[in-house]
Image 1 (spheres, rainbow, N blue to C red):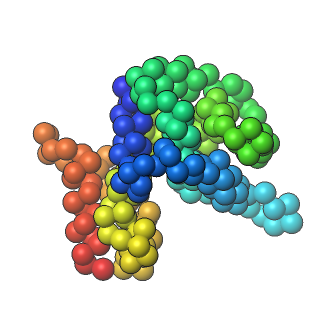
Image 2 (cartoon, rainbow, N blue to C red):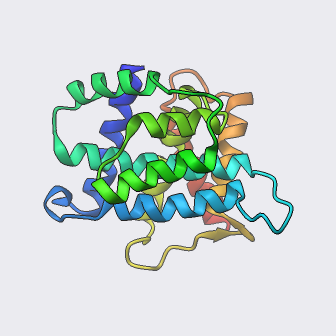
Amino acid sequence: MKQKIIDMLALQEQINTQVHPQWRQQGFEWYRAIWIESAELLDHYGWKWWKQQTPDLPQVQLELVDIWHFGLSMLLQQTQDIDSLGQVLAGQLKNTGKSDSDFAETLEEFVAKTVGEKRFDVQLFAQLVQLAEMSFDDLYDMYVGKNVLNRFRQDHGYKEGSYQKDWAGREDNVHLAELLAGAKNNQPDEGVNFLEWLYEQLSQRYSQN
């Protein structure tokens, strides 16, 4: 677990640096991004008592992965010692707390600490991951995939506004989910770098748009 966390921290460092080389000095409001993503997350989970709603778990999980990106950024803002941070996170992610907690109430507690204290509560996040029926390996696989997509977006004009998010009538997140599902059933050839393979698959689909 620790090594995978270190790998994710390194990937987050890379994408943040791609967005802004001096990202640590910019004072980006990571807590605000987490707050907004959390509202979208609750919408996917369902909260409206006046209508029938069923949690959309795939979308809930994707929102948690986005929150993880911002949470890692908050933590990296505080230290550049990735090895030590990885060790701490490994311990915190294992301590998920109650598995029968109410999802919405846990999310609200998480958001309250995020906005009120401007910090990322890893243990509450881990509890949300568990309640969303995700394993650590699920979080890792989905994070790596979304990190590649984020890098692809930046390379293709996301920051400048020229990137097209819908390809052939579907959002890029949908294409990513299809590629990740396909990779589980049909692994790339041995020796192929998975990150490079996924990036190339995204490129092929985007070029056909």
